Length: 360
Length: 80
Image (cartoon, rainbow over all chains, first blue to last red):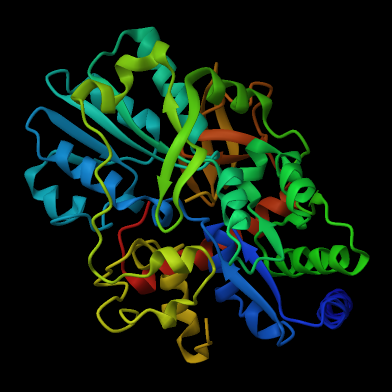
């Protein structure tokens, strides 16, 4: 163990020396963010190596306009809203789902299957499933949409805000102000999409993309592998999490996603509109599309709180640079989604990083 | 949210399974991983098995989940 840590540190030191400037590595997975803070990994890195917490938490990247649309549907008497618990406290215009919960038409579900069951059990209501999440979560939605079609469950629909990870990474790199040298790629998203999905990034932008597990040593070795690639000048897409991540991923899951969904341009918090980054239901499943069924659209961004979650997600600032952080915005009274979600950079920073305020 | 949980398949009928993770049993579907069999360790996410996993990795992930749960408890939040 100690030998492996020492080896990793040597690689990191060498990469920083060769670069001759700070190296910024972005993790794109909320669980990596939490594990990095929980295990004090930042403190073990060379001074000129910095970790940025990117758009890796589905709650955090959710555009305010989407939340407002969910709230609009929650106010209807004929709807039951089925949502993963993560989304319940995200503030929209005039409250969050939690504040509407007393009306009784908001249900927390653990799976998309539970949402479909809710529709079977409540035939007089239309169940709207708040379909958020990256590629790990999307297949679960696709399976139940197909099931609803098969069983003819017409009082079920989804409000899709499923996101694709790779287009967001590309959008970040397209911004000329970005400071990203490499990506530590998400572990369980990669189970579905395969590490080969990151090849366009290494080829187009020459940035290392390394998939790692979530345990501290796995993360440290992932960072060391990135440094090895920087030293050799050969960026590549690679997995060190070989126990569950293959080059091609879970093809059955990928096929069911593309059978049900097609990519469209979509809004991300802080990143704006990203081409082909958000999934909408294909025409043949159109009757399960809540946007179409209720004739609603995503509301325009309407954030006047001064929240800087967007800049945090782009790696442009660390959370303490936001004037609201730890002041009015805390885990108990969150203003922005990065403080709401336990996987958010602001929540992790609040819990573990407040004593290490750094300049953004 | 994108953290999948390792669990062992303790009952299996078509694509409907009951799985056991750290002593908790719950329903899961094996639609996305059709070749699994009773006793297999799999990664479960949002109610679906998405990958096989070995004992060693499963143990590491269980340990991590316990740590994250502690993290969440300290924030006293509603979690999903």
